[in-house]
Image (cartoon, rainbow, N blue to C red):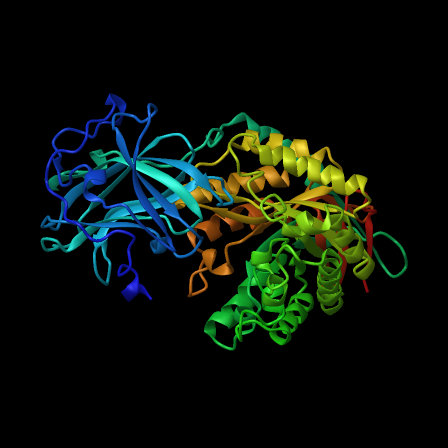
Length: 597
């Protein structure tokens, strides 16, 4: 696939001329001394359109910082990043050690990405395989013009016309504008650290930010409780001087991950590593696609199937992994099986559609009963409402009620994107609150409010996230983040924000869990060692928030420690005598009495 990646670009490959770029506002100026390697990009790009998207030259408008024309790029669908964008040849001989600066202005016109931000990978790389890159970055941005800088140093020589400027936007269905593009060379030997670099950040990232102290206090109050053990002998008398180890095995709070059933059950090195590391790192999981309607009925081919999915669910239960089902109803025809797509149209029978959806709920609930502890009953109703438009809004209540009939013990969830991730309130926030109220008022057994959590590289502050959680927490059901990711390619930023988002969620009284849409391989390398993100996660979840204490009983045979809520193994030893017991630590837990043999 990579070998074909650049063959069909929305615009043909054009040459850049080494003339001066456009002037920018003073605060956006590049450092002096750079040699421009490109001209005004809109002058070099031909408008074009095909089924993957469109490229236009537009007037940048009065808010544009120092340029009149912009490149407007449209990605018609979400897919591989290189499926939409432009590629422009750079007629320059790049030399090993040459310092480069690439800058542009960008803004989002519209997007269907969950973060509500535009996504752009802009870089200079070889025009043919192996596509070696010399400078660039992948990031996201809002609807306001933002200056983006990337710097780099050539690691080898590249011939004239071998390299190309690439602007890739195919990750999401979106429309973005780019202007004021500059590619500057500062020559061999220039200290690239002196060049600007756009790095995402957020308010509240500071180590001494006030919200951290408040969150720590809430965590102690909400997520811990006194763990008390009394050791007695067979005669019922207290045993003093006994060693008691209290080891948290599984948090009460869900820390989950997304995977696929086929990958999990694969009889290869990757599958074995996944089966080892998933229960070591996480206590909850879901499948990204296996339980969706289309793959469940076979529309996605042999890589999906009920047999391997059920095998994986049995593995999850055997390994103590709490499992979430995703999703029963995604109420847009584009996310339904082919036999449902064929029923779309003006002559569609609403009663027949209702019946078919209820059969879907019955089927997937029947297969997964006893294996799935929580289900996304409805996914993304803001953008996906074909069934509600055709059958009436009350079908949403009907789906929840039917799911409760079939799964009386499972928690039932409404799932939506761009709620927690948005940097400011949008109409979707009001829609989601109103939809939740409608379901509850209509008698829907809605147990959990799902907040997806696909963050861009431009993220809300922890304080903003806490306000959003407070707003939806007042509605009654508990909440969880269901699909956490962070955009961009700044590893330090990703680690810091993941740490802080987890802290926000763990500190909020109405949140019951967090689940990442990354796979386990985002946290673990092929050799089993932790990635930087894996270390960040484990330092928090499996060290700071994991109780593993060894105590000694007093003369009354008692000892106590404040521990994080969850499932504990209690091991008691006195000389050659030993006993093991288990405790589910809750806020109202009674002391555990252990009798030494």
